[in-house]
Length: 176
Image (cartoon, rainbow, N blue to C red; front, side, top):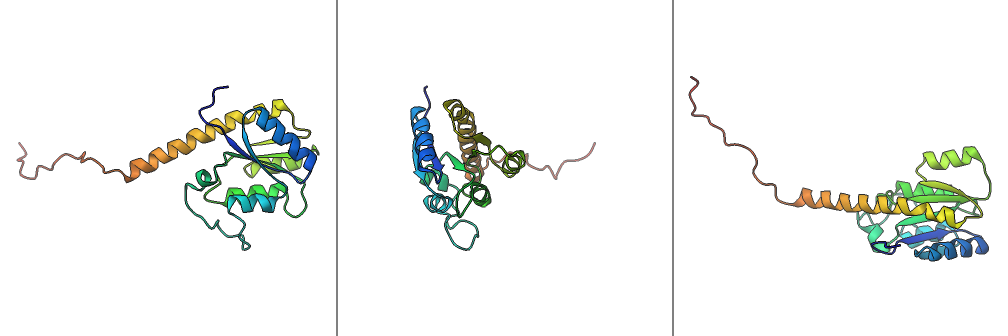
């Protein structure tokens, strides 16, 4: 399992048993895991916990690297803030909108699943989450990791000096 770096997953679930299960499955698959018990604690960890629902306080494009989270997996049904609400806040953030979010639920409700996927969830897992589900995360992580690197490369290109690629004008030429 030669990954270039250890990926960091933020796991959000109000149920201690489910949180410990997902944490163990992720660690078994060599992920670094931070587990929290609510959507508001997840936002606090990410630095998005401002009360006014505006853009995140840190608009730096490198915020995902400062926190180091490569993927967020969250329960749908939680008191206070649902997993869907958390998904929406993350996707509205300029700093974290590219981080994949996976929703988990013990209820198989197609309209809920579709709504989450349409609003930016990368995947939807039915509980109990199994190792085969966790194995589906890797392609999302690798794709996102390479997209972030490509984006950084483009930003570097934008800020580098542009060579003069235009031909000089020949105003003194005579038409024959």
